[in-house]
Length: 89
Length: 191
Image 1 (tube, one colour):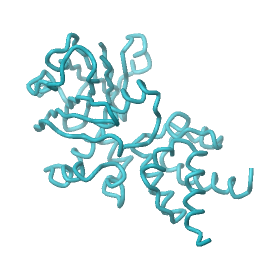
Image 2 (image 1 turned 180 degrees about the vertical axis):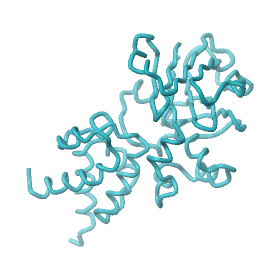
Image 3 (image 1 turned 90 degrees about the horizontal axis):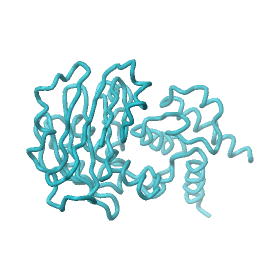
């Protein structure tokens, strides 16, 4: 795993912390972690995660990309895509 | 007949979510739905009414089509009737349509969605269905409700809403068709 990916997982972990009671599972967070199934996050809070991610990474997440954001790995993929699209070259 | 249920404990929702947060409504609701929220006497209740409609319909769709996504925009709600304590509506998800019946009380909002398939035609939910006859039920203690399904449906669906129940853990023994839990409330539906 690249340092950048691990750094993104750490940033997501900070965001997600506000929405999960399951701190044991949060400690084990990895790309396979499913927000609802593994972290018992309320589905209504997924939108907060998306909004927090938009703020933290200064990106805009369209509905089609948001659809995939059920896991840490899928969220990182979306963040990477949006960051890449932001770069001028 | 496929059903899906979703319950929101309004106290819990207030703790967990700030629906007035910038961007929140835009991500969850389309223009028409946001208009319903803006025009509502109680916008907070409308937010969670529409949310439980989407969630209950999504539960049927995702089961049936093995589709898992965070895609509130793919579910569109319309209301057929609404009063202080009940509402009926329709939710479309891609090519599927679902009917919904909602019970609203001071402390909770509960919606049951029905798939279109089955014995009844597409006339929709009987607006005067039993879901609207529950106003006399005790809203604050453990409450049991019988919800009648749409007119023309062969079966009745029984929905049980329990508050702060120790039995929560043993509910599986009662073989509910589907379950929804939020905050203090556990909802169980039996076919």
